[in-house]
Image 1 (cartoon, chains in turn blue, cyan):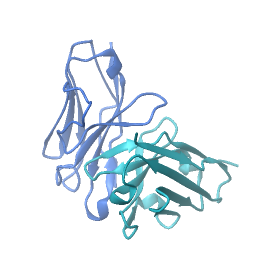
Image 2: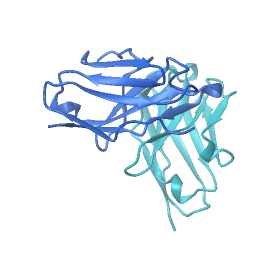
Image 3: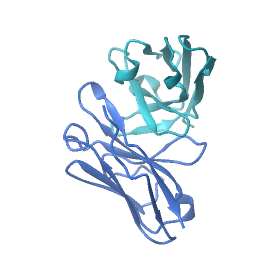
Length: 111
Length: 117
């Protein structure tokens, strides 16, 4: 049950695109299409942004998109906005008994 | 409106116990898996435990097995986490969340547990 690997930080200017990677193993990210992404602003609870690798919950802007290739999932934020500055975490189903594993977290900075 | 409200956190000495509660409203509690997720100060998220709709299946992260027990009372729309033999490394904000398999949504606001002498 090791944490998924994410870059510590990414940054971009308003309007640009940034991509956050989330690398796991063939036992979690690579095995299942159950990757989700969460946005967390300081002092707030996490918010679901992407589920099932690439689906957006109602209310999440379409500039947030998700994908997966092999053992690595990715979250792309297009048309970066100031309010997107936050921490982002990936999470994967990890097999038997509905275990879950989170990523290490990525701080997104809007320059 | 969907609401999850955690309570029961506080300061406890190493080796002590605490029972966290999560009161749920706004959705059919008995129809969903539920999870506890924690976040140590300045650190990332860690899934702790989850429980099936009828309470018949419970899963835990290795670091809390044998010390924490997740439970639920569907009649009271409430989720619980009994934490025993607490350690300094259990210090964290504890969140409850509806576990929709594909993702956790929504989350409560969290309750802070501090383990210190």
